[in-house]
Amino acid sequence: MTGAGASGVVRQETADGAILFDADVLAQGERFDPRWFDAGFWRTQDHATEAPGGRGGIVFAHTPHGDWALRHYRRGGLVARMLGDRYLWNGAERTRSFSEFHLLHGLAARGFDVSQPIAARYRRNGTHYRADLITRFIPDAHTLAWQSQHGGIDAAVASRVGAAIARLHAAGVYHADLNAHNVLIDAHKVWLIDFDRGELRAPQSAWQAANLARLKRSLVKVGAAGEGEAVFERDVWQPLVAAYESTPGSHEKDANR
Image (tube, rainbow, N blue to C red):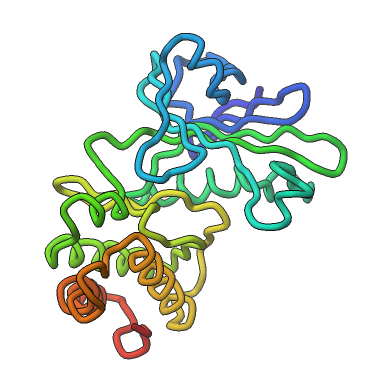
């Protein structure tokens, strides 16, 4: 096991791969138990619940170290039929889990409202690997998709979401799958989660506009425009865009709505 560096991250070698974890999660010198990544381990102790609101593949674990969100990386689309949960090996730091852990760790340290990373691992088998990520459970929050389907999204919520996205975009934070299931809201904050394939980029209107367009399509898909497109534009999308554009650092003139 490698000691914690200046970042507070510990790397722990395993028989078939490695684990990264936040040194503050465990007692000094304590090892991270690989079983903690497995939802089945927590289910056998009746310490696991399935995530509601369409967050497929997420399991909440109620552990002695706090409440965690467990995610096993799985492919989507046609390629899933061939590879399932396997990814091509290109080095430890380029695994999906380690990349997302490092991105989230850096963003959390800078004060952004994102999922706090607890631990990440990869398990290598020849030219492929499998991966898992654990993040801190965000209490008293629900997805934007859930909000759309249970009471609707008003202008105030939409404005909060727009401002939160703008702050990340201004810092060059690219979210590869910005959709209504990956935005959490509580009474005070908007949280962005699931940064798989996310990265830091130079702020640029093209990818920022694409992010917003993806979110808009997702909102329509989950029913946010159920009362008609005109109502959705007036009550949800335009307040979101206005807040996005008025947040310092956003690219006002180029954000494609």
